[in-house]
Image (cartoon, rainbow, N blue to C red):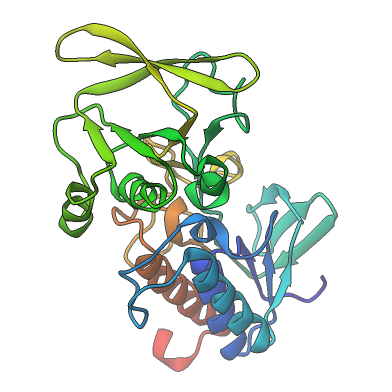
Length: 310
C-alpha cells in the first residue's frame, strides 16, 4: 500500500465513481471497503430512477458498478475497516485493521447505516423478525403479515416489494402524509394488501423466540394498541458513518454529516467527501456518483496541479 496518491474510503456508488476517475486521471488509487463493495444500494429491491435503467435491482446495479470499476484496474480492498485517520500533515495517514497507508489526498465516501427506532425489543429481535432490508429478508415472510415503519422513498419501495410476497403489509408512518416520490405513493394506493397507519409510531416490539406483536401509538389520539405481525421492516432513514472523520478534525453538521462545499472539499485541505456521508441534501445513487466524480477530479487537481487549476 505504499506510494499512493489517492485513498478512497468506501466502495459504494460515490467511492466507486471516485475510483474510476482517480485511475483514469493517472493517480495511484486505492479504495478501502470494510464490507463487500457495492454499498447499501445492494439492499434496494428495485431502482427505477437511475438514468439508463428503466428498472433494475439494487444488487444488479451495484454489481455492474463494481465490475466496471474493477475492469478499469481500480484496486479495491474489501473487508478492510478503517480505524483511524491522521490528517494533520501533507500526507494523509489511513490506519486500518490490517495495516496503514498514506496518500496525498483522501476521499471519504463511507456512506451511512440504517437508523434504528430505539424502542424496547428492537435489538433483541433483530434477525428474528426485525429487519432493515426488505430485499434480504422479504422472502422469509411469504404469505405472512408484516409491518413497514417509515414514510420516505425507501419505506415505500420496500412496501411495494413486500406486497408481492406477504399476505398483508401495513405501513406505520408517524405523520399524515408520505414524504416519498408521487409515483411511489400512487403505486402504494393501488395495492389491495397494503394498509397505511397514519400518525402511528412503534413504541415496543414483543415476542418470544420470534416477533409476534408491535405496540403502536397513535400520536394524534394518544392511544396504544397491539398489532399482530410476523415481521417488522424498519425503514426510517440512515445516519452517516462519520465518526472517524469527526475524530480526525473534519467538520460535521448537527446531524453528523460531513460538511462539504460545491467541489466536495471539507475543512481540511486535500480531504474530500462524497455520497451519503455528506451534508448534500439529496441522498440518491445519481447524486452520489456525481459527487464521487467531482471529488476525484478535485483531488487530481490538488495532487497534480495542472495548469487549469492554478
